[in-house]
Image (cartoon, rainbow, N blue to C red; front, top):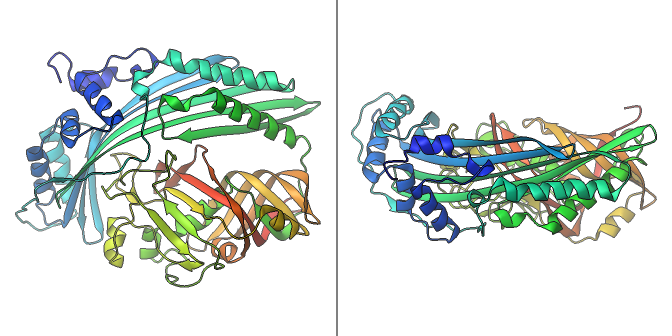
Length: 511
């Protein structure tokens, strides 16, 4: 970095995505090399203004009280957002996050501290804090660092840091105008856009040194329509790990069409009679139930601590033989994908349930050591301010042997649901409640009257065992899903084929 442009100046002026691009030379070099696939660890070290000697000293300090292992997590994230309401931009902002987290492990205990400065003095200070997890003294010989190559599952053509706000707003206005033009019942439209870029570098006491470049973008619209004395609303959003190429006229049309269609259906929707009945989960966004009610219970920390109902089920049958459930960090461009996890482990595709049998938990370093298996690339954290824990990436069920038509036809009296908003899950017992925004009644094997505003109530392991049919059409949902756990939020993806659950409690009239 040149002497006339300090890093502190860069952090103060780095929110230039809204105004105009004035970027530090070292950042421009890193950005260029990241997008053309030639970024090296020396580029990242130059960007964070650290070197191997500094990092070795910090690790030595972190382990000086007897810790078993240490890693340093460097992060620089630039994010921008724009909101359009009532045909005008009403909010816009930027944020810069920059710092390092120091983690020390001693047995199954974790010491953690972070700093927003990455000079040697600041890093040594937080290293001493993290070191207090242990209470002996020892001299540490830190392994020589070895760079680890990682694949790239989300190559960017045009990075967001090269795009001004003037190039983004036209797409928001186009989406707003498109929705208003499609139906005279539309009375209000809100459009939200956000994008971010993260530069990550991880080094540990075993000598591993790895870097990652993580883009993210989201575009969504909320539509309110009025018909007589009734108002209905629906929100649609899409999110991927892409650059400016994400914004297209086709995307605008897709979001607008879905918002109008979904909102219109709600005017004819009813609330069904409550009771226990078969439920068909529609392909795509029904993956939220798979994620929340089942996926969290497969995260290894819950099982290591015997909090999950699946903690004694490894190798046992938990579903029908045609049920396969996967957590996959390698889905191209998906919101939940990562090239490496936040411990520096390579991302991978992990079968949690294989042919109906519990095959694997989702592991970070701690749980992998406990179970004496390899990490699965699921150690994730919200930012450098947090220690990593086992988290899902893209969680989905593979396609099965049935057709959607066969599944619908098999139900005499039940509901079909394909739009969820939120839910609550108790990891220990596996009990869940999900709020369904929209769906349809199934009567005599056919989809009939639209339904809305109902709850699905059940138990995760029981619902998994009660999946009796899985369709051969699979769909990923590319919504703006964020998974919360341990006070942290991380981007997640999910998907489903259509499936039939033999029985769930539907909360509706007289519930």
